[in-house]
Length: 240
Image 1: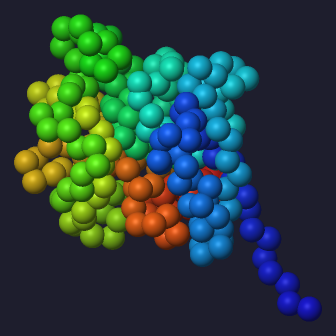
Image 2 (image 1 turned 45 degrees about the horizontal axis):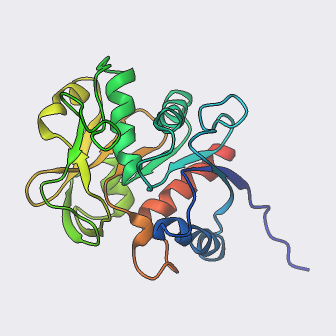
């Protein structure tokens, strides 16, 4: 009888307000099935609503990965930020896509950079100087080219210095507000043709990547995007 090595199953927290009307949410089960079948990367997924993500019993402590999913405005900004902070501080592999990217930057600005007034214009329309602002041109349903910084985590994951990715968002970081985040260690390693930031990462963290584009929307859902595969691999390593 042929025996196969035991495959570790990693626990991943899917943080977001789950909805069948959000396409990225409906893609997740098929993506995880494909990861198991094609790559032998097995994930046990737990959906955590943002209202529960900040609580001691409903937070992301003890998980092997955290994925902060699209679907803003979140029902609880505080819960979304708490999930980012826990993953960042505890070395849990983290991926934030679309709104997850936006809130990863927001958490870093407030917690690490001390910018208590940093705000998301979708959550606080009247904010005096928001970090996350409406895009000059909405990217809902659009695809765009991205230049990836050589030697970055993003470049190693994607495997190329240029890529074309799919978006579904209307908000992004204000370019003039990012210098403070850079000064405190965050790297912006992917930009569009106009130089606008589309990828962020944290050197020194086991795996911390945030993309304004949505890798979960790539293709027909049967072949996971390299970013999704890399998160799964990082989760399995963390489990081991």
